[in-house]
Length: 252
Image (cartoon, rainbow, N blue to C red; front, side, top):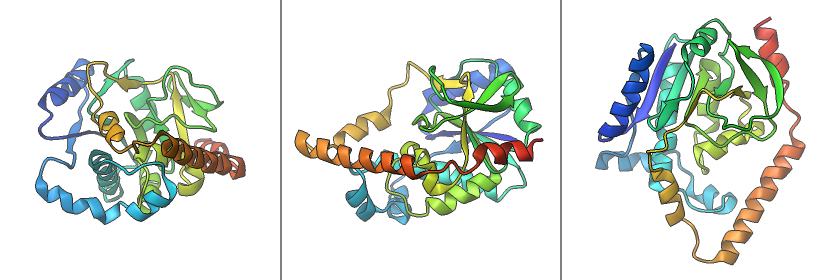
């Protein structure tokens, strides 16, 4: 199972910090070059980002780094789908391991994860329905997923499904994944978390997101209210797609 770290070529400090995380545990990994370093990457912005749907259904425009971030994850999914690997680990370069990752990674190798995603960065308050284990860690199914993409395990079938669902996207990747009733991929959360964001990293995405907000507080409130109402409606309509039974049946 390959481990990918999504990172800009120019982010040498982050790359050195990520490399030290793996050296600590003697793990092999690969850097996957993120988009955004070259002017030629600008041509990619409109290949998949749907600005019209964004204006109609989301609360603000996506920043350029947010679009590039989504495209980077999609490029890793494409690489997985084209490979003969059953699953892959995807980490963003601001991650840190909060526990020894080797037992969980070994359990992933022995488990059928082809059709699911497992978020490794669920935060510290992870509630929900426990459906199984990966080593000593529990797998939890949550109604509302945490909005993080710092680290996750994704199966090849799940990657293929997400590629199709995100052919045209208009939300950030972390929020798109929360709409699991739309893309249809079962997503579970590892408890306790295996990775977290490093405290010494400034989130460029968070900074850029603020630049896309409307200066009108009233307009921001109305757009956010509309988005939250649509999200809650989706939750209410969703009949969990037997994700628990799917996972257990493949690993019984």
